[in-house]
Image (cartoon, rainbow, N blue to C red):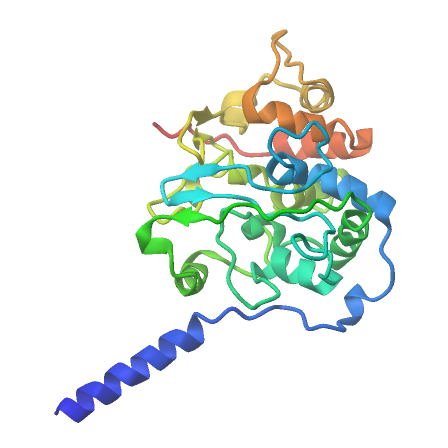
Length: 299
């Protein structure tokens, strides 16, 4: 009987190790990532993705010095975005475009380890190969920053990265987008930007006890992921009186239609969306206005 129990336990352990393994979605040499990307277009993807807001060196006035290290508090511990400058020792200077794609689409590092979902690959996973290649080209033009970010300090239950593999089985759908497409080009461009590149739902939604977005609160607001405030509802429940022009203007200037200004982390977002072409801000506004009204969750 003891032998049977040991065999069953060994089989279960082996199965657990197999299904929780980090598997990169792309192999080195994947033809989708061959050739030089367009760094000029990559700069727009960088801005739309709000990359500097998390990865810029804290206290550094130059937002393009991506040394990482900002503390991101959460119910699951404190996480610190890494150095993503092209420094070959402390940053991503030795990465290939495929390495970047595996991080963004699969949440997998070059060492084949899972990234914690504090890095929003759950949204980035829907990005196109072309945009990732162009983003990589742009990142490689930025200043090299020496020094690694301090390590993460997750809660004791989350210190084993392999457990992220089980989380992914429950809450992550690699390569799939939450974008609601209509076939109308402006709306669908906005869907891609809002749902994937700009990952707006990562902040403007509520989360369950495992830290995953509750589908019925998507864009309806909720407690800030760091637990320091409350992020507003951006569905028609709250923005019903805003026009598409109001939303596009706010994304360019930070001004709201009631003569106010956005603040907190949204001010950083506007710093980035102001760099986008008018057509992209208009597309984001079109998609936001099309979101169905949802009630704001209680804190």
